[in-house]
Image (cartoon, rainbow, N blue to C red; front, top):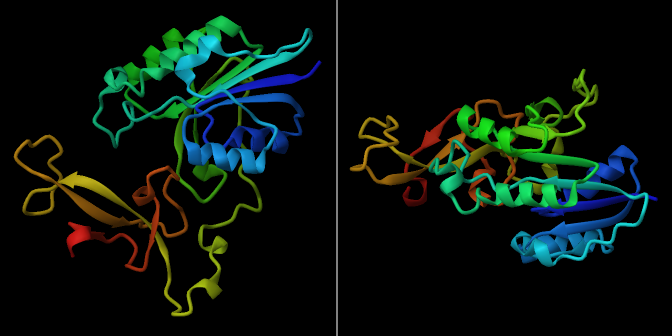
Length: 256
């Protein structure tokens, strides 16, 4: 008897870190991931991981579950269609449609425990996700800034959330700057969290997101709160460091 895990959209297998932190011993860990880089990182850190490949091929998977085993299915389905920073295609985005594949797998395997993560989104999209999940559980909202020096506002759906769910802020929570090694920058400059985002701006620098006559320009934005990092993503320009003053913006940054 043991815990068998199927992690969909596994990334670099942070689920395994979570199990270790929680003191949960996993008997077998299956990972569905298509990024070669992510898979290489996972296999370096967790060589016993069983890679399943593309989630769309789930009907051909051979999952070994012994009598008495407890099955856990995890997933953070692609969020591009739901994210406020995206085009708002919702379920019309082929990547976000993979949520329904997650549901198909839940219905097929009927796990003892399951967990789904996704971005904050419009209420109508969030409610659609809730309606399609077994038991129609309402999501729990968590911003990782409560626990760590990084912004990551996310919804979590699950079949095992305690009735009196709370999060306690760690007493030893560190700031972003405390992780920087001063010896890495001999110039003594102060690095601050920033990102580069495509925006439609008029001649006065005002956002005009839906104006078809305005081209998108890349804007460097330095966070006002220099002790909080932006959400870590696979897009490098989403999370960068800048020596510019906190709270400043620089338009058309690649050409200035």
